[in-house]
Length: 446
Ligand SMILES: Cc1cc2nc3c(=O)[nH]c(=O)nc-3n(C[C@H](O)[C@H](O)[C@H](O)COP(=O)(O)OP(=O)(O)OC[C@H]3O[C@@H](n4cnc5c(N)ncnc54)[C@H](O)[C@@H]3O)c2cc1C
Image 1 (tube, protein in one colour):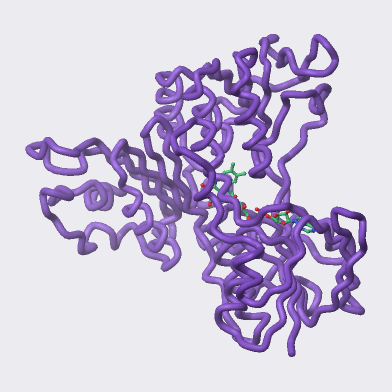
Image 2 (cartoon, helix red, strand yellow):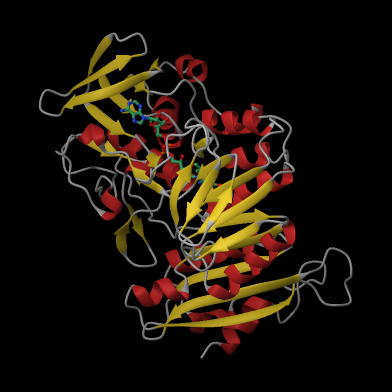
């Protein structure tokens, strides 16, 4: 009987485990996770903290019990400390300090990512938190109940920072958002889109501090945070949330596995690392980017799940290749929705593409339809030489996310901007216009 050990059982590890347990008989699956819970949907943290959902119950879709019922052996609150890749033995230590060893035929590393911890004074003070685990969200939520917590400084205006800053404001606290860059969400969107989101944030009551770097977190009593100090000023705050990014967790590789983009475990399209019978998935691994045609680091739950499925089949003998990804993502702040896939214009240029873009903004439906209608902003980024679509960004109060998925497919299948004007897009006034914004953008592209 083949034995598979999975290290880490959040989204990537759980997807790999379920793939194996659901599809292959006679495979022994052993799972380790250092956390006490698994499969937590981190996107739920801001929703719960901001009271947009009632409780956290629905934020878990798997558990020790569910995996055990399918036949897995599960060790939770157990940290893998060493892997002997020659003898194929995993050594772990549980919460009571007991050492556990398991041999393997193949091992899947799904150790994920850790929040970046800035090397600044005051990071360890009470009231300073990261936004990653279910436990982080629970502590933040509990502390916000304290009426003495009036002002919260969120550092980092990427997805997680923007979402949690909104949640803090929704909770009735003064919400400040600090960011080194001149706008939010810069990694995913070009300026016309980030500026729209900034307007939405300001209108919602978030106090934006852009082009401003955190220098220290200060305390009056030496225990709890009382202010943040930046290169532009000092701001009183009773809570600080650090959301400045994530790094892949590769400690279990012990320097023996080759690293790639973003210092993650370098994997091929079968999720195999540089060591035979060692696979890596999710946030700890690289992933092939179909827009750049290069190995990349894109930490998203969707990528984690897909790579887990790919590894699950491969370790059981079914050769399955990853289809690569476009980094498709979305965000909804005060009901304003933005979606992007592939490369922004700025990123495309930085990658050396002779990039161009076309913008088009219009109502989703004909103006004579008054109900449930609104404007949609679209940018398509493409390569001037090959005409290949490299990316797309959309923004609206309408849910137009399905349109974004089409651009994701377009990038994956190397669709060109020249093909877009004649693409069969149906028309029906309940849904769109005959000359809809996608067709129009295609027609206008230079
Ligand atoms: C607040 C927040 C919101 C997010 N929102 C979205 C979203 O809306 N959409 C989206 O696609 N993505 C989102 N993400 C990103 C997404 O959560 C991650 O990409 C995803 O969690 C990656 O899954 P993973 O299983 O690879 O890694 P992780 O979730 O990091 O899990 C790794 C697991 O490995 C365990 N582990 C690590 N080292 C060891 C060890 N040595 N021994 C034993 N166990 C170990 C950890 O305990 C953990 O359970 C969000 C992330 C956060 C933090």
